[in-house]
Length: 217
Image 1 (cartoon, helix red, strand yellow):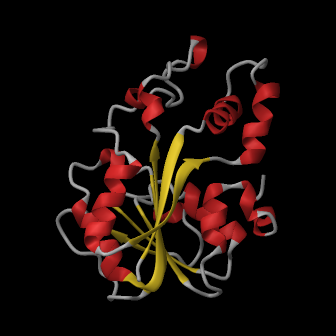
Image 2 (image 1 turned 90 degrees about the vertical axis):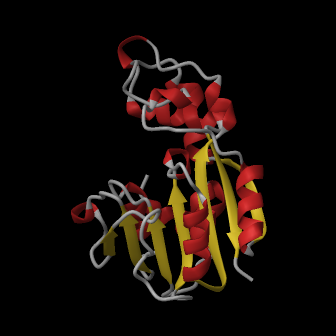
Image 3 (image 1 turned 180 degrees about the horizontal axis):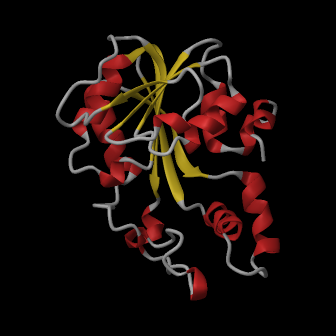
């Protein structure tokens, strides 16, 4: 589904709901931008926004046109943008890879304008007890938390909220991240052979990810 449709129905997707709150022609930074899938979806829904991205590696050629990319490790160097220059920050499935979360929270607080929001998404604790994909699909899609060998630990929303409050953030929202359209497809896909679409429908049905939204006063 093309994300431009989510502009009219942002309630159907947790990430789209966060993106819909960003100001017109605002600035959004994606921390841990990886292959750019999230950025491409965001740009489809909100082409009016100025996009920035940072990653220790990254694939900037796959990012939306005009996106300004910085390659670096925020655990060892500050991000290059000015204080209070960003309206919204997204951080998708990064915290479970980090040994220390304090630099991420501190840098996000520094960069956000007053009223700016931080969205963090990470695997839900329930993923520790999920089985891996089975049969021919085993190892092709992360279902159990430890299917991804680069994961270091589960980060609960309660622990993350404590770190954010300590930095000065206000908590605005938290819960289970879902796309209701994809979740609704699971009863149909569950009878089909293994595929990426089938696994995507299942994780949205199960509520595979947890999220938190924090606001800088």
